Amino acid sequence: MMYRKILKLALPLPDITKYERYLFIGPHPDDIEVGCGGLISKLSKAGKEIYFAIVTDGGAGSFNLDTSPEQLIKIRKEESLKSKDVLEVKDVFFLDFPDCGDYRIWDAAKAVAKICLEIDPEIIFAPDPKMPSEIHPDHIKTGRASEISVMMSQYPLIYLRNIGEIPQEYKQNFNFRAIALYYTHRPNKYVNLNSEDIEMQKKAIEKHQSQFSNQEDLSMIYRYMTIRGRIFGSHGKRGKEGYFVRSSQQQHCFPEVNFY
Image (cartoon, rainbow, N blue to C red):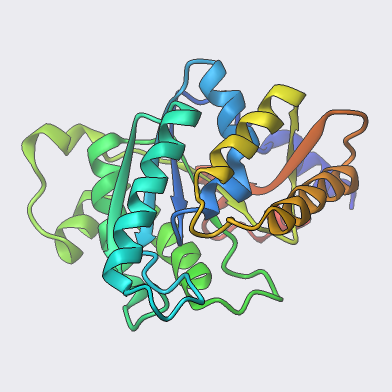
């Protein structure tokens, strides 16, 4: 135990609020806002450069059989763009893999790696693919694809082997990147939120009307977010979000980070 404490002091977890360029990756158009909206509000106010990448097209996210997947895809993209404006996100990348459809993790990883090489984020956020109770294949695939994409966008030969030619303007963008996982059962880093961050998160979530048209459902989500924050140690009108974070040195052959 003593040596783990020494190792933690020697190689600490990164402060996820101290970067300048961020990429948040969501399985569906509303996941980033629900999982990370408070942090994104905090980062936006601090003038950070923030991007979204949404892996699936969202075309299966409805109980209404009268709505076609094509109609729903269009609606959900529009909702994402409205949410982007609320949170002052610079851009949204839509990868358009089929919502709850048959696609490979490796192909999604290549698509995310291309974005990483283009915008060169210092840290990426994705859902935790190892969360024991998670059964949604898109959440599991998105988390694993995001982790793999970090490797692909750090080493040019890995990129060449899997994706192909490297654009000249991006050759300087092969850099190490930190990873933070949301929707996680194993948070090792917490972010304090003030009441303004929480309100901005709610406004962003409410732009996804196709998913949250029922006020009762929204109220339930907000109660859960409040209770989760209390579990993490928030009090009063404040909130808290928890993430499983790894620096670039802690992502490969470093099991000790799991005990931080």
